[in-house]
Length: 253
Image (cartoon, rainbow, N blue to C red; front, side, top):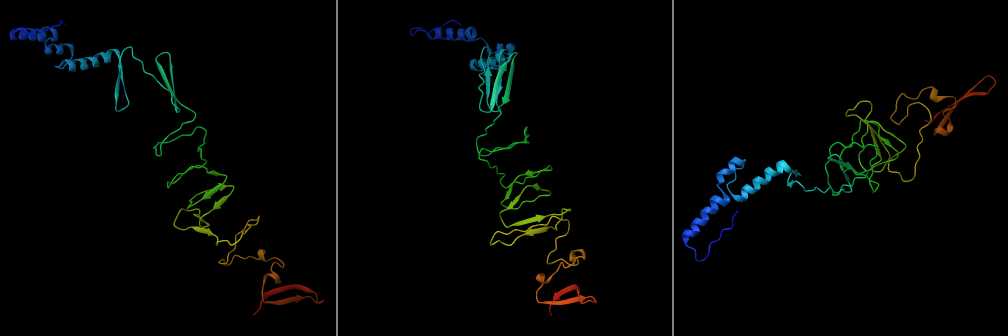
């Protein structure tokens, strides 16, 4: 493009001539841009549009969903590995992104979809994981070496080496049917350490509300003696020699 100048002494006609020559010869007719596949009618617009055409043929864009960046021919993308991602460039034209063995997520709140743990371990640097007020549901086996509950714990099956109830001392059993009827096992507030031992045998635990559950086998010879009853009356059965054969203890009148 020629350099055109207008001197202070030039006439208005000279200015008009030079301006028209600049428009027609130097810039050209904007209508000819259509033949090049461009639609802009300004120099700046044509340059921007032309850059897009060149980029499509000689470069490419990268986009993060909000911002686009043109990578032109001869330019370089610099990939920096982070504490969570390793970036590796290899032949031919290959970019490999790998998550590190230890992933750190900063911030206080994040949303994830389904999470699969390869080695089956979920840990926290503080040694405690909180699920807030969310329900924890599993259809598999829950293996616990020690369980401390601070509220209501609902379980359809539990295998554990020990359970510690730390709120109101209550365990609720659903039973074989999931319905509105449950059995609640609770304890009075202890005033000292207490030990209740379930015997190593098969049977039914008898309570103060039990009826018709004491069998003859439970009343074996002398199973109930004077030390088990108060205000006793005693009936002795003797043989012909006057030897006591059986002694029956009963509560006094």
